Image (cartoon, rainbow, N blue to C red; front, side, top):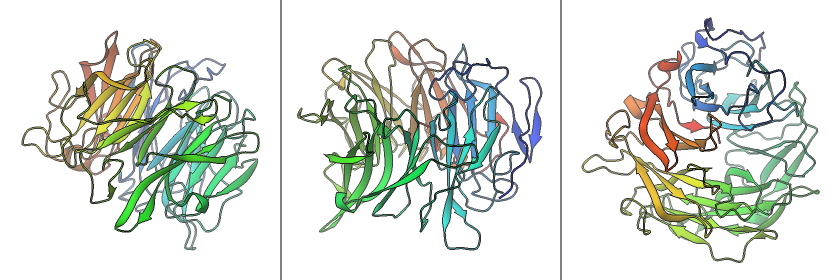
Amino acid sequence: MRTRALLVTTLVTTALAAGLLTVTAGTAPAAPSGLQDDFNGDGYRDLAIGAPIANIDGHPGAGLVAVVHGGPNGLDKSRRTLISQATAGIPGVPEVNDHFGSRLTTGDLDGDGYTDLVVGVPGERVGSTSAYGVITVAWGGPKGLTSATGLATPLPAPRPELGRFLAAGDFDGDGSTDLATVNSGDIGGLHVFEGPFTRTGKATARTDVDLSEAGIRAGRVVAGNVDGDGASDLLVLGTDEVTDGLTSRSVLYRGGKTGLTKSGAVAGGPAAVIADVDKDGYGDIVTGNPEEKSAHEPDGGLGGAVTVTYGSAFGLSGRAPVRITQDTAGVPGTGESHDRFGTSLSSGDTDGDGFTDIAVGVRDEALGSTPQAGQVVVLRGSATGLTGTGAKAFTQDTAGVPGTAEPFDHFGSSVRLLDSNKDRRAELAVGAPTENNYAGSVWLLKTGASGITATGSTSFGSTTLGGPSGLTHFGDVLAN
């Protein structure tokens, strides 16, 4: 590993950092905003985008992360920062299939009020050992992400693809942000690094949670507050073996003074968010299963489903979960085999009514004779919960959306709702990592009083920001 001073530029001055163009976000106030996803403390949310197979310095699959900064007019592509293991200040060197940026999460790990960016590098080989995976923390500050360190100690052993799955939250309620990670293929181990972190990459301590009692092979982890007690809870998504294959299962672990404690099982699937969709003060668990929640992976499934399990002061509510598909009243389209409704999820209030809405990626939606072009559906929150009433759908064929739907674009593989201009309404970012022969692109859709609109939407790829061309999978990951 190597560390160098990070190259800093201004809005009007650009410089090449080891072959990558880096542009800073300009002058920020001295005091941090404390706003989630605000890396430079200027009071506007920023968007981090992963391009995990980008070719860096001749190394295919090395990976890249781009940050587009928010401002009065929303996300501004002219105010961006690109980081890779070839960028000054970022530890490591680019190597084939490191996959820098294949996982991203955000949080204030060192407690200075600026959001930090946590980057998973699961393909990084650790020395000459058989261990793989490192976690890089890029530290936020008045000038944005100007330095980074690798998570140092204490690290788990063995390390099969450390950093494959990440989530940040205050799981013990002590006021400091913690970091949860599950290694790829690690059936029994969830590792929680306890904050606050130092800028040398050291956590206060590490707690290991045995997942074997949950009976699942763990995958993605998602943090949020289900019971409103001030401590973050953690949803562990995974699979369970059944007679004829694997089935999706999720298990909630509630946070508290003693850390994470197993609470109960909820609907499975590879995607989830925790958000208060009915505005009752408790986080609701929204899971997406693109193969239908009752179908066995990977061959079963109809069009896909989103399931809402409501939260309460006691954790999981006794209220019956609500399942939404493309056959639900008000939801555009029709549930068809392998549409993959629920591939990706994100939460935010898109119309300013105070209720949290949910963006749903429909990665393989066919448009006429165009297979797997992709679609995004926005479901509305309400006093009665998440509903199909008033839902909207967007594709590359929607009037006002740049581009044209093509086979295997997979528009909606990733989605992100965020208010980047402080108007209290979340805009929509959509990733299509296989657009243009796997170069990838991201679309930005604006919002108004009636919610997300295609009017004025834009799109961009890696080269728009000064990054590499060719296979990058730009937009494969949008930090949530």
